[in-house]
Image (cartoon, rainbow, N blue to C red; front, side):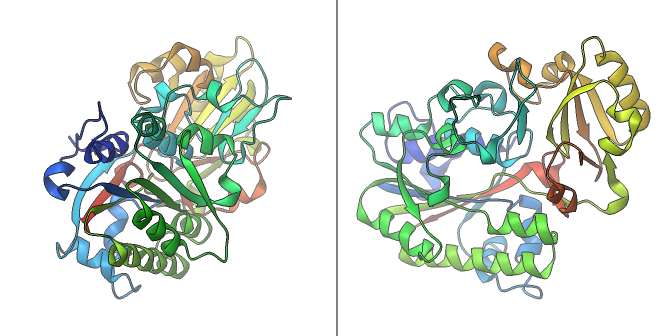
Length: 380
C-alpha cells in the first residue's frame, strides 16, 4: 500500500523530533538526523506525469530526469486524498486527515442550509454568510502541533493567500512569510531554511495552471516544468547539511477532449430536479429539490451510462472514498454524487464561471493519473 499525502507532515514532524509524530514513510532511515525540514508542494505534479515532465526532448528538467533515473534523491509513490483536488489535498496535507474528517470535501461545496456555494480558492471569511475557517475545518494542523511543541513552523506563500479561508484551514498556526511577484521565491525559501531550525513550507501553482489552461504535455506545461526543476535545483544547492527537502504534490491530472464533456445546463434531463450544483467537473455533488433525489439519480444513470459512477449520499460515504465522514460534514456532500470515469468531465456552464468550460487539463477523479503523487526527499 502506498503512503498518503496525510503522512507527509507527520513524517516531517517526526524528523524534527515532535512528540507524538509518526514517520509512516520511512524518512528517518532514508534522510537521517536533521533539525530543519523544507516541504515544498508542486501543484499538479502527479506521479504518472513525472516521465513526461522529465522528458529531455521536450523540456529542460534535468533534476527530475535524474530523480527518475535513480541518480539523485529518494523517490516513492504516494496517493492524494479523494476528491483529487487542491483544496481537499492541501487541507489533508496540513491536518494529516482525509476530507471526510476535515470537511473540505471538494473544490466547491454547498453551504448546508443555504443555496450558496463556497469556492474554497476564493474563500475570504465574511461574516455576512461565509463559514468561519475554524468552524468549517475544525481539526488542528501540524503547523499548530509543531508550534505547540516549541518547533518553528513557517509557510512562505504568495501574499494574496495570506488571510484566506483556505490558507487558515490548511496551514493554521504557521508563521506566514508573504512573497510578491518580484521576489526570488527559491531564495526566500532557502533563506528561511538557513535562518533557523524547524519546518519551512512552500507551494507553487505554475505547473497546475499550465495544465489547466494549455493542457498536459503542451509547450507551456513543459516550460512550467523547467521552472519547477530550476526551483528545486536551487533549493538543493542551498540545503545546509543539517536539513532535508521533501517535495510532493496534491494531485495529477489528465486532458479532457471536447467529445468527453457533458454540460448539465444544456441537457434538460440532467438539469431537472437540481437545487444546487457543487463539486467540480470530475466529481459532481448534486443537491436536489425535495423528493427529487431518486429521479435525479435515475436520469443521470441513464444519460451517463458507462461514463460515471453515480451514488446516493449514504452509498458514496459507505464506499470509504472520503475516509470516515464526520456527521457535521455529511450535508456538504450532494444528495447524488457523480464520479466520472474515463476522461469524462461534467461542465456546469450555468452555475460556474465561463473560463471553467475552456480548461483543457482536469483532475478531481479517482483514476491513478489523478490520485498518484510523488514524494522526493533529499538530505543537505
